[in-house]
Length: 83
Image 1 (cartoon, rainbow, N blue to C red):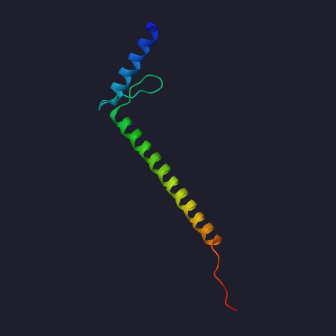
Image 2: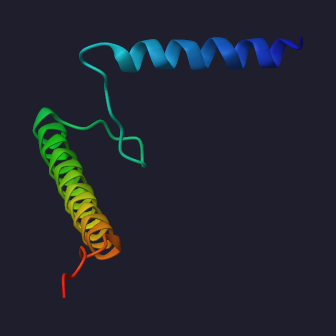
Image 3: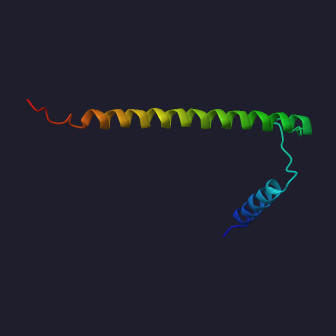
């Protein structure tokens, strides 16, 4: 194993450990650190996006369930007609 890959693995491990701590620091793409207020705003945005995604998935599941119920109702024979 090369020294470079071992060092890379250690770096990834340390980065994950640091991110899992309570006060993980987040950075902008240009290297600036997010303030507490910016971090809170980002968390609110992420939660909103996740909520909307879950609602969309729920609506889709309900629609599919209704379509399946309709299909199964259409496939059922309508009974015998006594003439």
